[in-house]
Figure 1: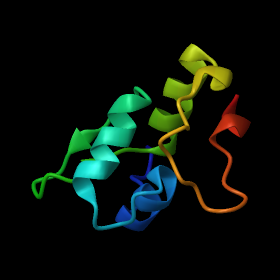
Figure 2: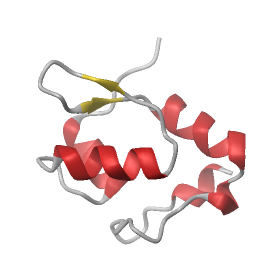
Figure 3: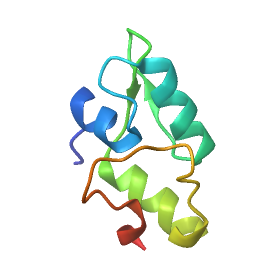
Length: 79
């Protein structure tokens, strides 16, 4: 069973911060990374969901132009 990412991890993944729910969803949608919505409207997802979405279309096609990731964070490494 997969563990859900924390709100902090989702904020780091998207570069939108832990409290910017709408921006997180926009970035996840732009990169076709599936998620479900928690009761509070925030996205819930696992690393398996991120990896599968990235691998299914090729890491080189990932739209990172709108994402400001922390130093050393590389979504393309999943491919």
